[in-house]
Length: 196
Image (cartoon, rainbow, N blue to C red; front, top):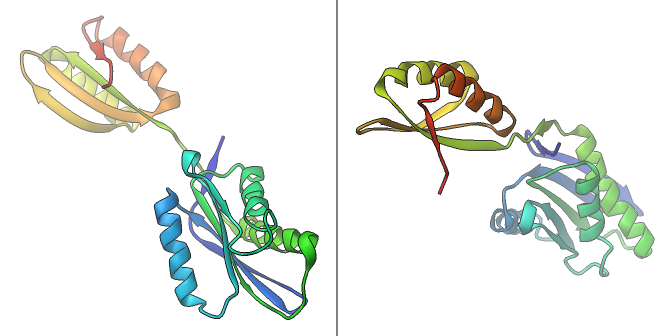
């Protein structure tokens, strides 16, 4: 099961006087990630690199920001994958300490900065939601509304015509049991519609 983070968490690693300020935080897409990186550049104008990795479905990215290729963004992304995170941005701001660390040293530094932040972060399971749409006779509207409330589902829309048309959202894992329960209670008079 994938996880996201409850809030941003920071860490700091110092290696041979180079300072690596790591952060992991919830982030939904590349545009938001690029905006956050721009903010970090403004907050740290004397930093030599602001490397980042985003794990967000088809919008994932790994950016070395001038570090040797594959020594920053990709290792940071691997930490997020190893932690089974989704919708998370990892950033590391580097201040130069005067000594070169070599490719292996850079990989370790960027990996450690992100891993330490992940250790302190509160992870939350991502719950995938499903939208259901149905039509039903007016006589069953009260029953359906009670079932929606009991299941902790969210009522999205109700339209009253020759029948009631209703849409709701609930956790994907609970949808089959919900539909089955209503099919039985509604005596087969609840019609389930395909989502557009």
